[in-house]
Image (tube, rainbow, N blue to C red; front, side, top):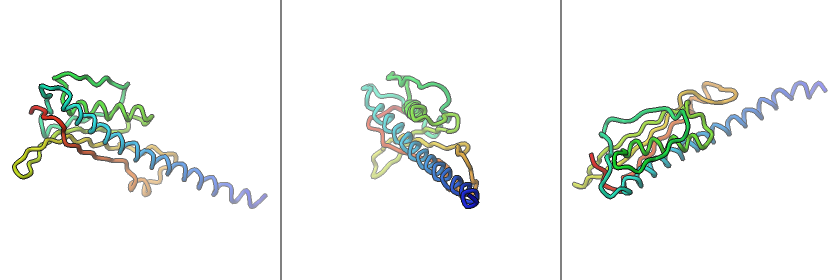
Length: 160
């Protein structure tokens, strides 16, 4: 009985640590997928409207948290690529049961020229505000801070 009393707290801390570590790894995977999903949807959205849609002013990123209910992605000529990327990313974060208030999402479009040809890109950056864990060991979780960036080339020729 004495052995159980001595070993049970150590075993419980070990098991809770494994569960906590697994949930962090799952969060990292989900945020990576959310960033990729947002950029992919925005890239495809850029070719949906035949007249071209506004990219949004390059170098002026949109930043927000993903709090609130899911939003409808509107297929209108006034909808910018950046706002589509933001909405798609936030919708994915909300549907994955992550706390949308805990993540900042930044979207931007930019132009890159290679060999005289202009390529337009959309970029999504997701940052975690504070770690969501059962037992946060600050030294351990600094290396597991959830942050991800995804960049896709736009399939269509958006305006601006």
